[in-house]
Length: 121
Image (cartoon, rainbow, N blue to C red; front, side, top):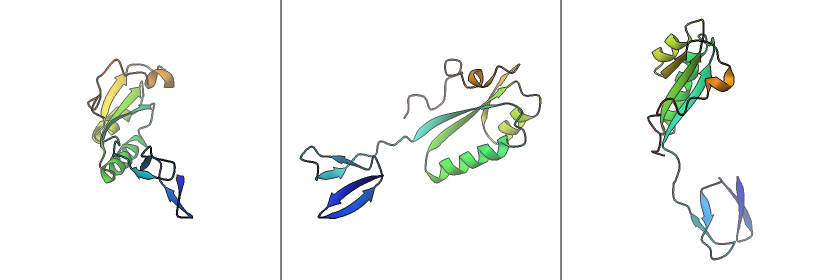
């Protein structure tokens, strides 16, 4: 949050909503809405069958309420349980590693698959 003085009163505003018009610190005008509307979320997962479905559904509800078009990608890092099946059932795009490569490798996929929302932000 940011504070702006207007006629002796302090008004709190969210960041990014106002910008200076270049005519002085006291004068401000609304900024253009350059917020992101399309995103891809990449989530590494290892043996998360009990929680992955609910996490995906919660993310979907959040994105739907904010009018953001989101693609959810789960990287199943060699899970021995039904993580991939649960993620697919919840509507996520799933990439599976044959063996566990560790957290860092589980999220290291940008050059390997094109995200549907890449370049459309």
